Image 1 (tube, rainbow, N blue to C red):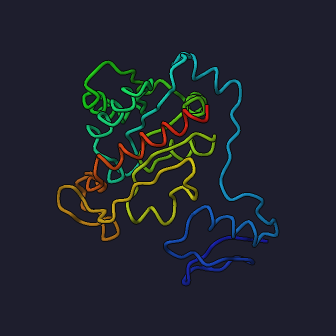
Image 2 (cartoon, rainbow, N blue to C red):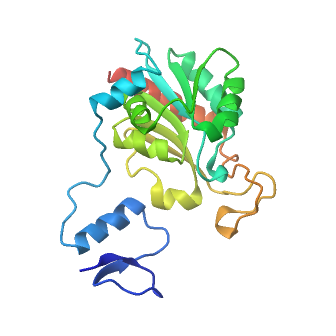
Image 3 (spheres, rainbow, N blue to C red):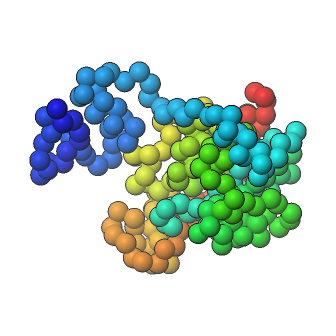
Length: 236
């Protein structure tokens, strides 16, 4: 038997659900699971964290008593990246409230990590390419809060139970933003246009590779991060 999601013009599996725009990806694939005959038992993904994951993270980012905030400034699509200097200043505001800040990124994100550090305007720990996937999972699980874009690490952080703050374009809000808000804050760019030319993300690819979330006010992101940080600390 074949089971899946299909657009109107696509060949249809034996059992299928419509693949349409503006449906949340989690709900879409849970519908596919249901079509296969296995009723979903949970709405949000959950990822188990192993002792080896935690050990790999501790080898790069040692433990401390300070509340840990991990900042990840990257994303596969550069249009999803919130301006790095702003992330740095927001991270500094959290550091002023007692947070230990660690800025992480893969080898291709070194420039973004460095730009966050410049915005932070002080000594801040950075990790570029130093964490394989197990170590990243372990670090995100240890974090009290993750400040990021609409990216894989943000989704991993949510799946291991860590609170997150992230900025989304209006296009991705509908299909990949967190479903709940008790421990997650989703800031939204309702314009979602290139910082250089203004072309909206749903209207095509301009090639500039510039932020399309820049219209979200820094003060709004900072307020959401500070409020959730204090909420997490109160529950420690």
